[in-house]
Amino acid sequence: MHDKPNAAVIERWYKAFLANDKKTLEELVSSDFEWHFGGDSPISTTYCGVDGITSLRSALADHSRGTFQAWKNDSWDVAVSDVHSVVLDRWIAEKENKKLDAHISLVVVAEQEKICLAFTYFTNQAAFEKFWK
Figure 1: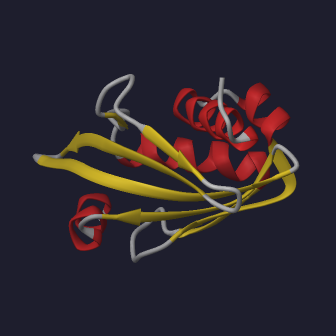
Figure 2: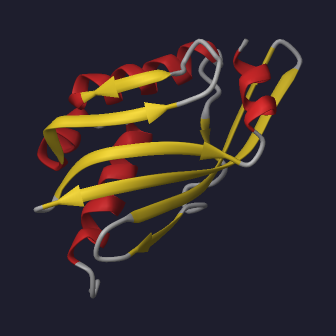
């Protein structure tokens, strides 16, 4: 059992994102949700609502020729405070003789057990952008 109420919500949200589970995302995401995916690549934008999350997931799959995935089924961790949460993971993909191997940090804000905001950070933003171009 989690001692921070949002920990379980964040874990379920991230698992639903990875699985592209729209039904679960609809349960967990606020109506005004925004995911800021920064940088300079074809997938860099702000994704809004559940449709935005599924759009991001589709873009990651499409632009990686279906190879985008978490490094392992359990390669992620969640750190939670009363205000913020951080999901740490490693994303991999391959296309056209290019490989992505990126450690990522997702800063996530949940209020009243609903995810309302997320920001994505990469250990090597330039390498991440190069892969997607």
